[in-house]
Length: 192
Image 1 (cartoon, rainbow, N blue to C red):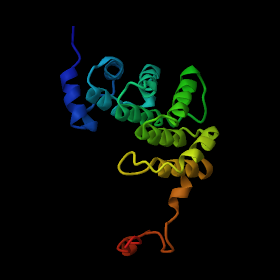
Image 2: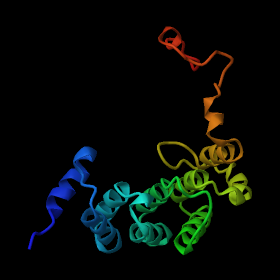
Image 3: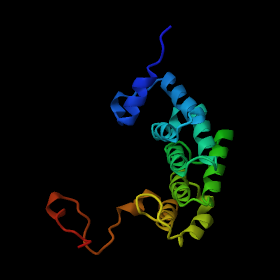
Image 4: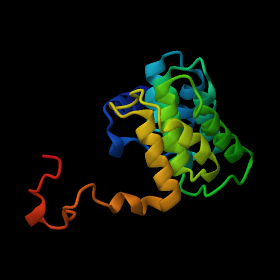
């Protein structure tokens, strides 16, 4: 019987060699098993990073379980929330797993950890959860730094804009200068 190359998969995932990571049911089962049972939070994080919600309902269930587990490390929970939001086929809950994902994201908006709240704002925007706009508005004053030095309030504001206006709001330019549309005006720095 052929045994799956677990050690090779771990090496590829830690090296972020995305093009070499297999797209097989065996690999998806491996990710799901590691997310649910592996004792090392670094392994759970890297498995969450390489998962996405299009890989099947069992993996989505594992992402939901990790995102909703308050004993889990906040960075792992945040990565699970972010990867739950990658399923672009979710304009609204269609089945039990979808409803559970939406419920977990809404619960994480009021989590005590700022990193989890930050990623819950991101997930709410990408899952088009319009009904959580009041919760997001309550978070706009949250000035606690979360991920990459960005505050929860900033991400909540971005999420509200995306829910209200779609992704087109990002096309705007923060100053009166025209947006850089060609190589000639890329040298203009509006923040100088």
